[in-house]
Image (cartoon, rainbow over the protein chains, first blue to last red):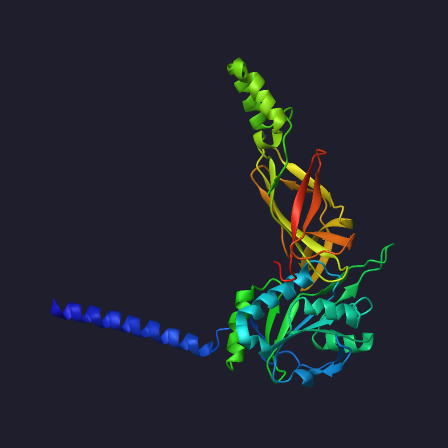
Length: 203
Length: 167
């Protein structure tokens, strides 16, 4: 009888050990528990030449040392663009003082209507970490091609209104400009906060 | 919360119950009728209610989005066909869709809400696209928007103007 109990003990012990080992291996293969899609180095480093909402010529070096969230949209977009920027704004609020380590670069794919003045009013509505960027068609094209971001503009209607189709991706770069994470318009603020905290803490 | 007041003639459950009561207790008829006439919206059960009606304010005269939850408490399906507002020259019902990682907008068309169902106008989906403000708006303002239905009924709803981060 004692022998059987001993065997059972050993078996249970073995089972526990193997579960622990498997858990350990799983942890090894996923050292960082990102919630967002991990695109570590899969996209080119941050690089662009554009004009910001104050009319200043800027490039990626102006944002070195900051975590950069890159999003393409247009201000006449009533739903998805402000909803996405609103989510990012909520996420930054939740970061508290660390929000200053982050910049959201909103690149207009509709520079004709999105003048620097329009962009300035627009990004100000979302928070001090928001930057509005515009450029010539060539500048915009080289950036959208770099990140394989598709966009298109419909023909204007009789009132001159037109719709723009654009990417729903938010590309996240670390302080060195390396691509790290991908969020989407539908990503929840809490998930973004979780991963931004990891990135800020050197993850 | 806004609600569609049901006129005493409408074929909705509460109106039927009221008429039954009238048959059973004729003495109460006069009083009940007087009360119904005095404040029919209080007596009539709302078949359609709208909650959480909000507008996300953006600067200048940029198009805005209006969102709400529309619940059908009635016994028949209702069909939302259009919306309008004295505060905007143009109001469209739109839907944001995602295709191949791209966001785009398409007209919403007529939207049927079955009995017991709630239709949500929410970010990333259905929204009212509000264009060309008649006058500047501020956070905290209340804006009337009339929702129109296929049976020629309409519902006037007050939407609260909220900040840019509104979800």
